[in-house]
Length: 88
Image (cartoon, rainbow, N blue to C red; front, side):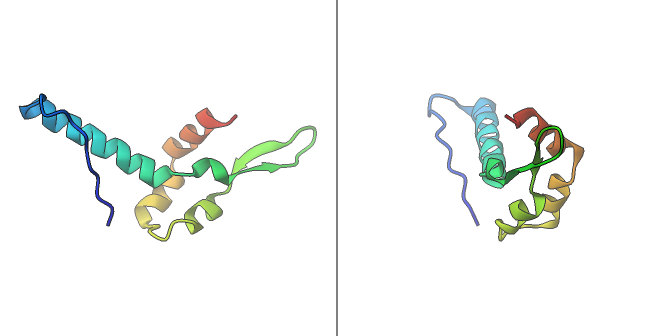
């Protein structure tokens, strides 16, 4: 089970510190979950030009911790929009 360490300055206290710690944990969680997603883009040759597609099966196969949550996430409109915004 991964642990999420934070580097919150000690000068931040109370609710502010809690909020910063939660934000840090949330960002690290998504970064860990979606790491290397770009390696799973593939060009599909369609006339008149190639189309960039995401290889869902390869992405899920590379994650031994694949769960119902990750599978549902990859199949969601949110994830499709995430990928669409990051195509190069």
